[in-house]
Length: 495
Image (cartoon, rainbow, N blue to C red; front, side, top):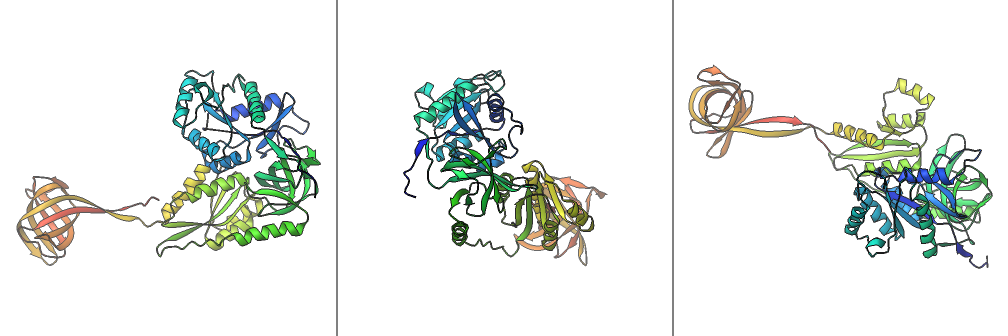
């Protein structure tokens, strides 16, 4: 393979980041509508996560990352795959939590970036304040003497969107964004899922070389042969070079998001890579404490991006008392084998944006299996958390109510006594528990069976009141003893 490297300009790969509801999706939608022609095959294929547009004869690849904060890992990976970032900030709301998170991803990936101040037409829009807030995050925009370009846009009216694309191309030129068009092809998986008709499908952004139909390819976890290569609109391709968002069919299973996909000379070398990766993996050992319980989980989702986000959020739940163990984690509908596995391990099945197969529905009618299904990740995580909390034994919580100084003992009979005293602090309730102290030593424990004042039954008395109590318990109360009255309740544990 003595060919010289063919290093040349490639279309920039752009990731759009920012806080939820600041308008990332609206900007991307406006760009799609104004720059992508509808083909006979339809618009953009579902679950692609990337597309390419053309501006003044030059191409730009845009990664359409999910906006939900649960997709932090995917967004950071998006930043790693991209050449340029666009940081979207609401002109009226300014820098928010996820804006800071996005800035952190951009800095870690050392990406050149542009600040798009969106919703410029909105009441309360204040670009000057946005730029000042960015200073606190150590970002100095061009207006304030720095080198980060900004542009005011409105996804609603389209104001500034074309100028944003011009700015992307300008930054791309200044940064000399290039790639090697020769040599073995390599790309990054940004989305993958299992299609019921077409099998495992992966969306890949090509970073170098040329992928061709028929190539033997592998990631560190899966192998395959490219049976079909498609662009983001579902049109078939014979080859695809750097910056292309491509859809690959022919892998043995859906690869993990973020994995590098490479071309190999033959199946043997591809399998060897997988073997080496598996050897490097250290076995994960998680020891349970003696009193620690385990909740087994089976996770089924629509796409691998969701799978990763759910696993990430589950890992954030405290597991010092209840250990979460994932038995199976994959894309696709809930099937009968999932239910059988759940039955064997008394596991919980969590399904995100998927259905239950018909055969599994029949199995469910016979067996009692716990399933949580939702279209919102937080609802799933909250459901798992609640089940974990129900597995915890309630804890006993003691609350001290008041203190009584014993003034007189009226009657003593087996394990019961009637005594009189004064309440020195707090209050005393009928039915409460008590401890008897003599010279600071605990000499008895029991319960207030009845409480009286002036020989009349009362439910509760307070500090300063004199009282008579019918006590049942251990030990013998004497004049001068101190009684501490308390209640003990079972309280539901929270994680």
